[in-house]
Length: 445
Image 1 (cartoon, rainbow, N blue to C red):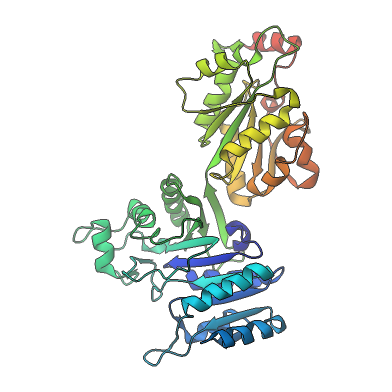
Image 2 (tube, rainbow, N blue to C red; image 1 turned 180 degrees about the vertical axis):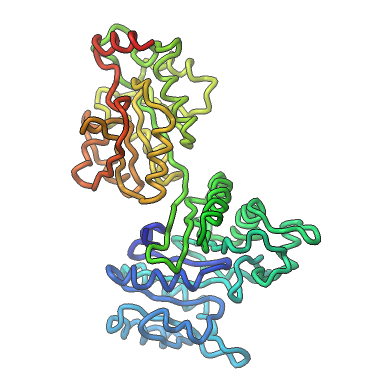
């Protein structure tokens, strides 16, 4: 996967990189990816090496508002530029752009639909660091902040050459003499308000990059770290990357919500379908437990006005109940309510039906795994050449889902996005929608 797609960078975005282990390399990968559809400005609020001006096509030294205006005026001739301060007199680096100039640059970037990439932290080429008191140097507004760590630091001591400011790292993590850095230590430093989350503006999205996932062992360490990170509020996703590869992002790990649509009135059946039993448990319980065992988080159940009994059945399950007071508007009304309750927390949502008791957690895990590797907009199970349920929708489809009307639900947007097919068994085709379906279900008990 491309880095810009996985970070979900859009025109007008301001993106700041902090931490260690691949910030400059990430920017180097992003510039050509983004310039295919949007101009790019690269700058720093710390210092960058002299040779890093080749991150873009042209370099401008900007010390004043006049310099900034001149650089912006010439910008259209290049498509990508680096802006820095003067050359440092004491070391082979370019000085940072002043923060007032960065703030002015941000205004221009947002107005013009460019992308601004900021290296906001220094680590001297190391893989892990603890920020000093004056770090990171972040502008007051960023759309996206990307903390970076190199996975090759796992197994190293704090005194390793791969660690920047080893004494600060040691104190921050409470490491003992000779203790080696493990996966949980990386989780701890990245989730600390004195480490990876230090001084991040409240309005910023946070996506973490675990770089140097160059072997199967690195990947497994990265997955374990990511599972710890995405439990932290405010961390939207974790990318496992190997920046030297043609396709740098190997996996994008994030929370995927489960929304169970249980507001139907069961007009073709005698009784509330969601509470009809299969193998001595209500149908809605099967869907809820499948979602929970499939590690979907959060799990939301959308119920109708008559759903008090459904709520009572679910009182001992860790789910969020949303009531649809107007289910007569069609399934789309439940889709809207479920999506609204989770959209700010997750990278994708799986919509489950409350009348499909044969769906198992393995299917949900397979949908999530496919999404991690591809970030495909829509992933649907297929059996016998037919599309089944449940279906996963990536967050890039959320705006389309909010526009769906009537009783179509998510299938109304299938023609707008490529659908990745996941071959599965017949369980994805069976739902309880008629007396004949009910009879078949009883025969399977």
